[in-house]
Image (cartoon, rainbow, N blue to C red; front, side):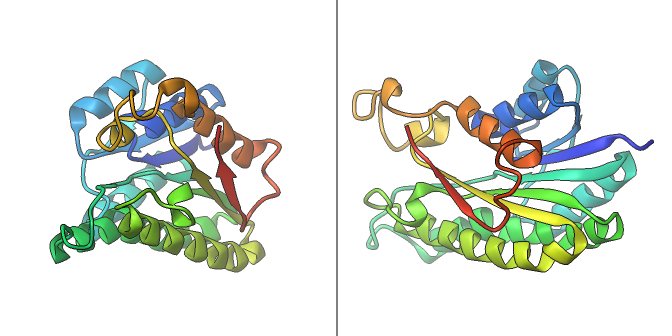
Length: 229
C-alpha cells in the first residue's frame, strides 16, 4: 500500500509547522515546502522526519516539481495551502510590485497547487485540500485590504473547487483565522498592541485542519470556517 502523503506549503514556521506536526502524528508522511531550507529542516526534525523541497510557491515551475515529487512518494491525500504574505500598507504606500506579490503568494500560489494537483486527485478518486484564508477576507486591519482581497479570492475559488470536486471525491475546505501568534503577525503588531493571551496559537489552526481532514469538520467542504479566540 502506498504511503499517505500530506503536502504543506509555508511549512517552515507558524501554522505550517504546527500543521506538519499534527498531520505527522495523524499518520501522514510529509512533503514540506517554504522558501527557507533552514526552517524546513527544523520542521522536519521536530516532526521526526519529512521530505522537504525549498522554493517559492508563487513560481509555477516550483509547484509542478512539488506535485511530481508528491506523486512519487505515495498517494497525495492532503494538501494544505498555507503560504502567506501580509504587509500592512496604505494605498499611498503600496507599490504595484507589492500588489502583484500579495496576489502571487496569497492567491496565485494556491491556484497553482490546486491546478497541478487536480489531475492527480481525480485519478486517485479523492483527496482533501485545505486552503488557509484569513478573517481579513471580511474584516481587515487597516492596511491589510490588499491581503484581505487576495484571501477573499481564496474563499470564492475554494467554493467553486469544492463544487467541482464533489463528483471526484475531492473535498476543499477553507479556514479563515483571526489573529494567530506567528512571526507574520508580529511584523504588524507587537505583544503590547495585541497580547498573546488574546489571540490563537498555531496549534489551534492545526487542530482545525486535522478536523477537516478526518474529524468533526470533514463535512464542511465548500464552507469558510472562521476561527477566532
